Image (cartoon, rainbow, N blue to C red; front, side, top):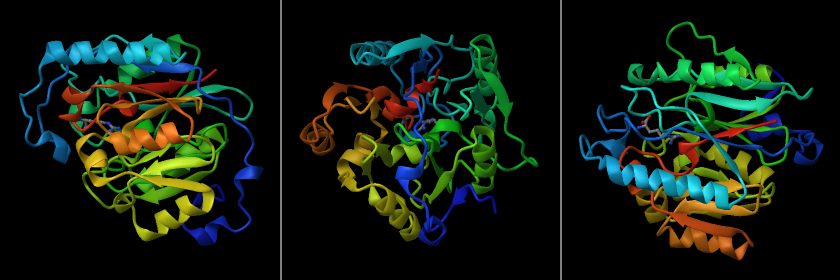
Length: 301
Ligand code: ARG
């Protein structure tokens, strides 16, 4: 096992967040308009009742409001054009993980998607990254292992540390490539509840010290890891986590949280810790199992 991978509390002996080097905050986000967004094949439990049920005009308005929310938070928004036939490309988090290496080089690690209907998305993102100064690194698989980008791999705010979720869309063996690509340690968390099929549906760092989670999404060893590293762990109610994907909020520079409207317990916690909260309606995208966090990719450098 690579020294850079942590799977249990025993592995964390001698590890401290204080010893993790600082990491620049994201410089902006990359988003893809929902021009071809639809719910077609059922890839997660949210989609089951919604096949063919997307209101594309409403989705477009909700997406524009989300762009406005990021802009209002002070976060620049870059746009990648939507490719016809790629109905999930609006979920820009999944096809890659962008970041920097300790020497400052900007790298985009391109995903290996679980579902064949999403595999072509990765090429469109690779082309965008090449045109925008990133070195493109491709995940290597022997055919069946998958990795779904920043849906399952998340930078710790301000630190050279990555949290990696596995169990449904990403295979744990892929985190060796993540750790190597970014020369950064990865703490692995096992997801055990299929409603929470990506890490970004149940784990939302609010600041370097605080995380919002839905505990029943994780196995016991993973909960121990989270409690060991974050001094403050806030939990989401089941209703907020499931019906409003509250843990799929995005927090910009530990200052502004953008979250699905109506997730009142979660947004209350955010306000209590001093975050500005912008509520948006992503209901058309929740039908497909996604909300704020997965509708963008964090960019660096
Ligand atoms: N329908 C998409 C899928 O199942 C939704 C992806 C949402 N992304 C996320 N990171 N939660 O692949």
